Image 1 (tube, helix red, strand yellow):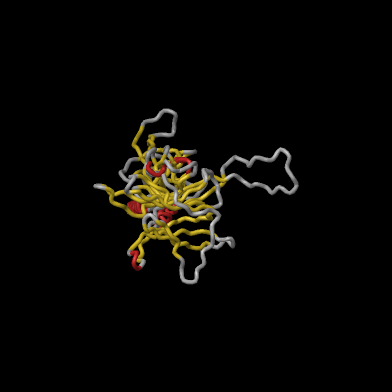
Image 2 (tube, one colour):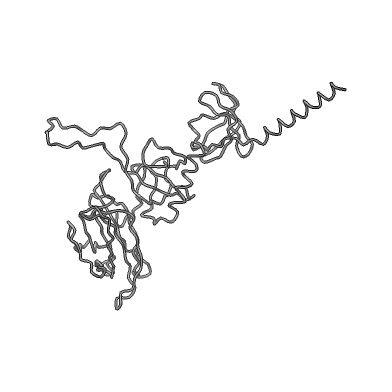
Length: 333
């Protein structure tokens, strides 16, 4: 009788222990590779037990050397290389990034040149999760810079005592959002700003940073957009987001674009924003707002209006216009 009671007690303890094991939560990780196979064993020869794709959530079951055994949401189990996974903290970081920038004004559409990673911050060594295939259309939100790895600034052959160190070389990055709502930082050289050909041909060796449709004019049976564009030299690591602005209006008589306004010498800061505003007899007009740093380093806002084909600065009460290094002029194309 005593033996039977002891066996029953052991059985109950074992059942309770099994119950605790089943209820235990496991570590979650996320697939950062575009696509990867699950293996039945950690060996040179193995069978595939399943497939996972970018962004999939998996549960960690075991670890061995550089491999992790996981279970997918569909129940498939297998081993996968650790380098194809990121942890919950990285995933949460991307979720917060998307939430923080969900209402940002899009500065330009872009398109990826190659398969590329979305990073959590500017820098090639920063964590990444989502991968974008070549030709992915994206929305560009914000420009950033990061130090270019393993590249030192060239030293002068005969350095002078009064020469200041040039510092590390920087490369440009873009904060971007894809069609699925994923937000992250992309290396700028891995994408193209998708500028309409009709104005891209007027780049004059400069780089389009952002562009916007100010309004549309009717020419015969079609509506033609009029554009605002901000540009820079074709260099990375500049201390400003843009230093030039141009407005392209449509000549109804000659059926072509003209550069109706240009200004350079700006220490411009993104984002650029657009709105509409009423101007007495002129009526409702397109308005764009530029943010620039003044000589003291303070970011100030400048307002401009387009009354086709004329662009004028709109001064606030008591505001005095400060001239830029560049001149404004109308240039015919």
